[in-house]
Length: 474
Image 1 (cartoon, rainbow, N blue to C red):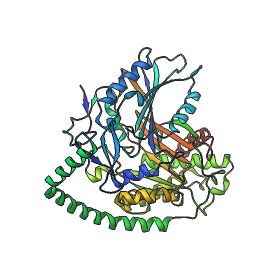
Image 2 (image 1 turned 180 degrees about the vertical axis):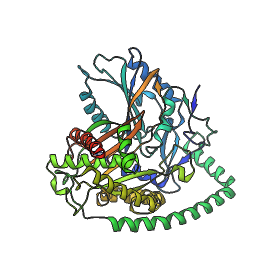
Image 3 (image 1 turned 180 degrees about the horizontal axis):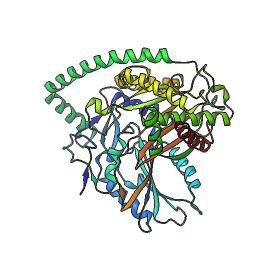
Image 4 (image 1 turned 120 degrees about the vertical axis):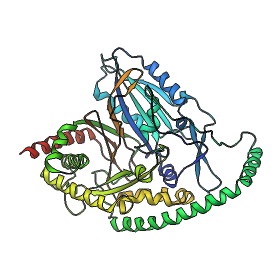
């Protein structure tokens, strides 16, 4: 029986929010703003990757959110909206790749890094699917790398938008879209003005409501901006070569941890599973920075600070997958602590403080402030201010939800999920994690020029998890 997800694309032309537009403006040739997810499947028999690609193409064409592209608006100035793509061909979005012999796991990482590096083409619906095969003798195994632009959705929205690509999951029926009529530019202007005049009373009510909302958001944004300014620190390169501007090359690594083992630590010492994971990542960063020679960061003068995005859909009582519904927290990572349990206690205290403050206030809530900024201001100012992110935090660590149910594609069972977070301007490292079927999957993406050898960070993080578990039993 088919499982139904939330409606993936509301009926009608949909305007991008201030935060959505910000992600469009943040994009640079060396800092593409797309999310990624690497899904690995295993079938009971050999699988033809071309068949999987055709299946994905067919389902993508029937998924409303994946057939829309961005169009600029006259009003509000600098704004944008989602509209049916004038040109949509699945051949522009679905691709196949094969690992060269022997098809080892070590060969997968550089391929994923190279595929995540280039920006998505402009003018097309902002997503791609890459089917990867050639896993040695395991012809029943394949992977799918999904890329979706951050303007389309955030990490929590990815399963909702991409869910219909999997077996037995369908989107809710669409409401009839209110798209602009086709025809010549002059005809479009005439029809647009006629519809606008017909809807004047409703538009007046909408504008009044929007003005009230913007005033409320502006007051909240001012408080967040003030807190962010107070939390800013002098720029200082965290990584040995971070004095440069970075480049287009990417380095990528992944690791898996046993969720039950981490839950045992939580049960003995309190906090949440996320607290335990943050302390493990802090331990991995401590070892990695020591190995690559950056010992200056292991002082209390300027602690390594993480930005932790928070999904606010449940707080806003919205089910839509479309767009960004984000706030966040800032968290100083206790990498100066050699004791794993001391790191966990420090993380637990920091997250409890953040939760007491709430996601609607504090310096980490700057996504909410971006939501209140007019689109035109984002167009003018966001590209200039984007590198200043390094004044607030050094690394982004995001938790992406994955439905903890058996999932399949073309009869093949999903075995592994690796979310991949983008690198914002001014950032050299991002870490994404998710829990699926009793395994914690951690994915590390870096600028290969500024923070290379993240495979060593993955190894150090795995060692830190083992050290924490051993310490918790002592």
